[in-house]
Image (cartoon, rainbow, N blue to C red):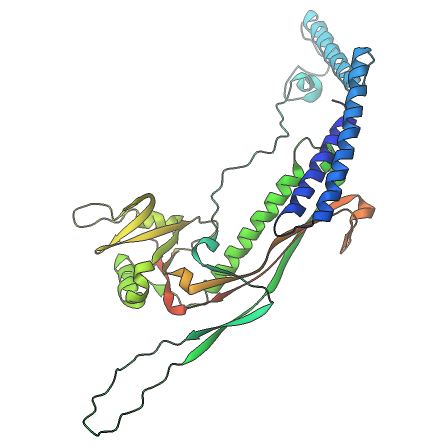
Length: 382
């Protein structure tokens, strides 16, 4: 495969990725997708023609660019081998020192390096807090939801024959408001990198932007959680009180304990009076962990420290029902646009031969019911 064929393959991959993007539900544009696929077909024809010429040149024993490059490399290696043989015959006596791998001119150049261009990824733990809150799709930039207020009802009063019936208090209502905000970012990439790299750089960039969306949602949710007053749970008894008294029977049946890796370590060391660990697989779902709290087993959700960090020695514990407590208003899921002509600030994609990847999403996060969860912490002894 020659350089022209590699460039055509990269162009085919880029156009295909863009076409798939415009076929997605959130960004569907059939005209753009169809136009891109037409370009893909044209590029494939050009690639086929180039491949035929390449194969003909090989059959004719005509040196092509790759063969010339290989010959040049072999010549360099042969020269290095001849020099090594000559040095060996002379007892490896070198005017300016000694042969050494660590010095390029004294032998380092002839030691091959194991360099891969394949994009490897470090193993990481990622979690989305959207899985534990209420997500509501909306179609306007602001709105309200009506709720009936909680009130302590006193029941009817006893009335004698012919007596007057007293009035009762009426239900009271309140409204929960949301207002959508826009969050965005962009990444500039040189077209040389996209064309010359043998890796799918565009796909890596789109995955990166997608993960930025996850981190943004987590950040907004935790910021809203932090608006609640913090409670020092101190120990397991504090968790029990949060469940039994603070949350009570309205939320205890659907409550969860949400903590980070440090919190898991703390819970995983708790034992009962018979020296049995209190953290164990949930009954009926052994893939999830639960904490034995009295007669109940409360599900435990673990968020990585990277997404929900410990504040100095204060390990975070969210106890309760966050689906009732927090609502994420989704106006527009992440939308990624790609341009080779756009101008952003000092960047001119056309003039500087760049491809700009721009990501935009619109959302809001609000407290739905402050009584649905307890924002607590336990101070670590470590």
